Length: 210
Image (cartoon, helix red, strand yellow):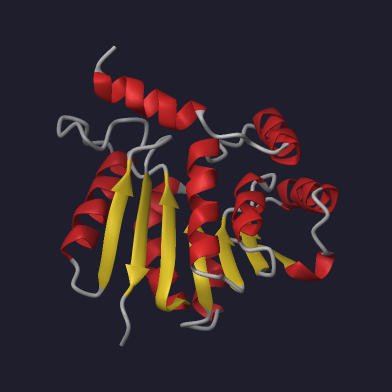
């Protein structure tokens, strides 16, 4: 094992995931949901904490794993979360309750993200996490950047997409979409960004002031 692989494994394994998030992760596996890794969850919590986030948007509720991590870093924030699967959101709501999160702090919207996002207020969120249909990641991130306030951050898990993005020989639609997103964001003067290699990759994009 290379030093890089050892460091990656250490950074991945060092995270201590709370029991309530472990339970939500187990439920995700039962439902066939590819939840964010504990390491990506921990980084997301750091971002919401450092941002002192009060308003958080999540595209892709799942069983609540990412939402729980986001709120772990933003203990006074309100979370708005979008998912097309009502049964997934029902499980997420139960997991939020088990975590002691007040119902008034969580707003779940059932619907397709591409239908819901255009109707939402721009510059309204401190942090936006995009973890929905990977085939639509570029479209969703465009909306996320519109909805994030200046100084707000957009988080994109799975940005290295199963290790395929770094391999130029991999040219399937989803891999190409993530590769295009990472490349274009890195060149954009409207944001500052960083790509973390923990988990399956986490693209962090902070919107510069206007």
